[in-house]
Image 1 (cartoon, rainbow, N blue to C red):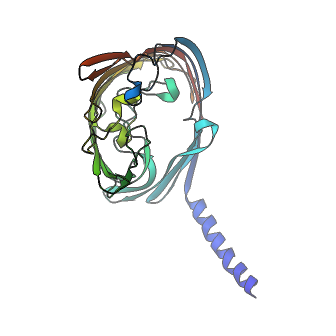
Image 2: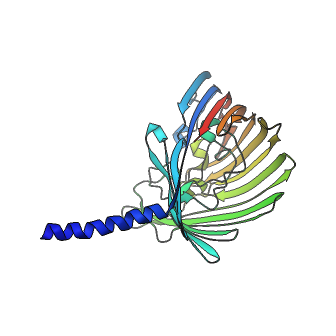
Image 3: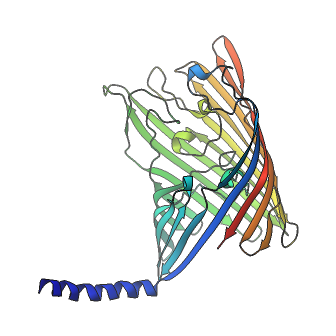
Length: 380
């Protein structure tokens, strides 16, 4: 009798679930992406860690290498909608293994939307550059402001977004902060705000982010607060078949915040000083792209990015500065719907890491890279 009752209950529940699935509108998609790149590296392409690495002894020989790989952002996913509720999931191929890129649901109500789950944060503006090297680099870590896809609660109304995001808590052994025996205490989530105004011929973006949490040593005696913030502004203008886009951004403790970094590690590492307070490395970033369509099949884009880092480490006595630059030229070719083949050539200069120690000043060559190759993508 008990089994019969379970069966009688399960059948109508299954019918309800099937009916709900049928009523929803599903749309699946995928994108296979391959990178084929030749890199000519010169001098020291190496992250500098701690005072002992502040020397000219750390060097790599110049080399020339091929990188031919399935990109980590190759993806497969789906969107689904049912009335006022919609959702999306997307899996990537990081390291050749499936990983969740996006998994979120959205409820549309009157003047706004509520999003729950993992998606691009409000200040992760990916549309300023189409640079394709390094698995669609897009100048995201070479000048732009990019915080990635994170778990969050987001409210959207018109062009305004407000999100409460999972904090980027870095342990004492992490790359963004160095300490010994510290525990972390987090009270509030990371917060981001963004606003966009757009028309058919131009758009303007304004955004900011804030994060804070504490470190306490093993004896629970010394306590230090690590606070990060970022601001950015950008815009674009469309003229006929062409466009121009520019973004400027500035941050403090950006690596601890979780912003993409592409520079020697010592440049952006937060270090506790003698009083237990953290240094506040800063970064000024800028990115510019200009391009358009030559004809129905071939386009062109020229882009450039720069970053200036400053890190005054009172605890170690080091004042560190570094400027990095990037430049690329590409010709996207679209022979059929969903098919894109993009030849690209570019240059990335990691600049000199200027280390000012009391009584001594050292310039460490960060090296540079020239690259060329192809980006191949088929969307299905």
